[in-house]
Length: 306
Image (cartoon, rainbow, N blue to C red; front, side, top):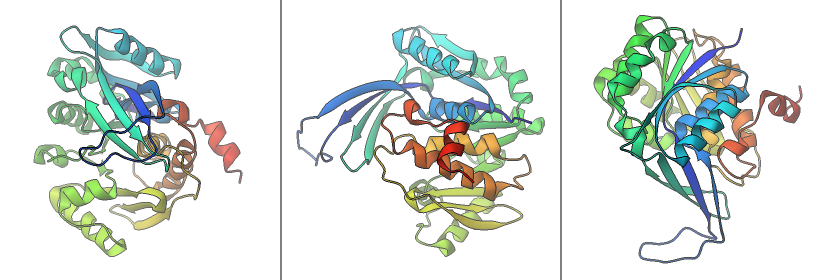
């Protein structure tokens, strides 16, 4: 059976400026080119789940503007249920400016806009949708208070709650208490626990700290090295697939969406799901843009034939 994945998250129009090297403080540089496309961590994760054949639904908010219409259309075009995307008149749709250098590394500046003004009514209206899901995924580009409300509904109804604490911020203790699986990258994990990620022992220490904070299951993504996992049943490290990266913008989001499309509710297949997610993200980084670079199941299977 296909997983039903609900994503509570951000909808941003991404503007990417292609540069030779990242500017230094006080330095003015010229961009080599500019591209715009639908994005936002929430949208990227939802598209990744949908393209890996999950039944995917979105809870979010956009402004009453052309960018908002673009974002809703982009999700619909990927077969995502957009019935719970709220449209507001007093805030613009979220946006992001991405600096992308010739090595495929990026720096991102985000304007939250409508994402950050989401109220409780949006969650209340989506209550039945949340109850019907297998997984609900959220990030930190929408208010933590809304995530807490959604996760409480999910926990009361046996839905697995997945938190991607990005961009890193202080986490509400109440939110951690209703989070089943937390997925930071190594920098975000260190910011949240105070323990630098340098080797597997330090990852184990991060897992122990998260357990003390209330979260029993952890995945730390470590860029092109792979992903560490720690659950109540097992822990280990799944290496990444080595490729030549062109644009890493949506790699982590692809990983999370693809993972949730494959993961069982009891996390018993986490190593296999992580391997699939690594395959998906390895394809994403080989193309430009966020949504355009996210692969389908068929593309993943064709690239990594058994």
